[in-house]
Length: 116
Image 1 (tube, rainbow, N blue to C red):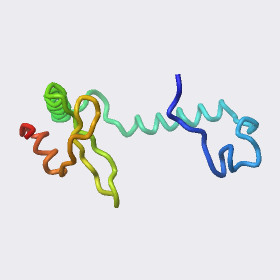
Image 2 (cartoon, rainbow, N blue to C red):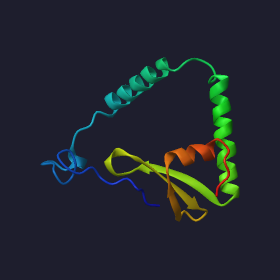
Image 3 (cartoon, one colour):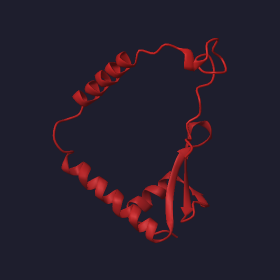
């Protein structure tokens, strides 16, 4: 199995470091404590209990739209375009781009408008 994660490059990685990354001393316990503290901070910002009903309704609606698109052999892909603009592509069931569309059209599909 291969991983899509590539080694760190630059000042702190293998190609820019004067010391190979595998020889750097790492305090694993301190790292684990820092990760745990970050997780607790994130959890403290989250409200207790289940998400509000309107959020659950939006998740259900997104699931219905996704299933409808999938049943028609399509899916939408949102990605960063040039100049920081979002690009929306309609893909077929094999992941091939059928066409690019405006965000407004993708929102219309999300609101229930059938594909043309």
